[in-house]
Image 1 (cartoon, rainbow, N blue to C red):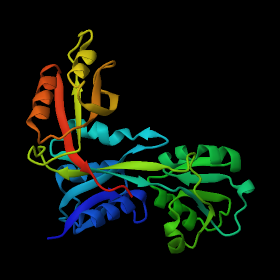
Image 2 (image 1 turned 90 degrees about the vertical axis):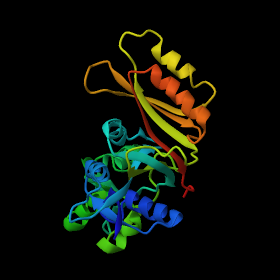
Image 3 (image 1 turned 30 degrees about the vertical axis):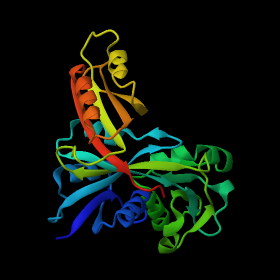
Image 4 (image 1 turned 60 degrees about the vertical axis):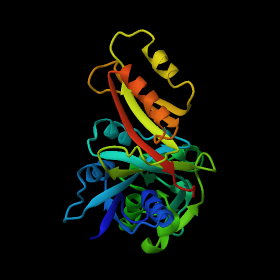
Length: 288
């Protein structure tokens, strides 16, 4: 049986490259299965279905960028997911290039196309080098490059993305590494179709989410106090999307879930919350 890992496509996206590197470093014999939207990737791993009888066992999704911060859609999804957990994370260097046709004059560029994240990551370059360009969003960087390819009469259109696909579309790199920060990186999560976290496997990091009872002064302070002996690498809140002013709190902890003391601490945290969920206990794949 063929095993699949869902990712944002088509071939050539950073999610696709991340999937290849993850599979290489973990020696997994999975085949990437492409989806045009993040929602499709997330739904596929939750249902373990990619259509055409394809069994989706895992998915890779971007969760945080060095410049733009958290990508919120996966977080919002994980709150309510019933059969998806985090099983690994990976940090990958990201190089955004300006791509177009031979002979394109940057001073005459009228449109720049890309996924919203790369556009936001390259705003300083856009404002300085192609200030007349209208921004146009695409589902992925490769879709943006494909639009340039399809409109072969538009030398004043450019895309931002991964230049490794240039040869496929007969395009060229007009400017390299145009991100606002040169050592741009994105953190990816590896998700698996699985209902519960395995407490027998050692972990480097644990991600939890919880909400607090209403009208509880100092509730967050008290809850965080229970974790004072653990290194917390990230704390973030997201609206519940049910009641204005109510939030979910996401926390990344450097801790080993296979240790009974850590599990006891998390049970104590759960006792002080309204809702509580362990989203994953996992290791980091070697940085690439």
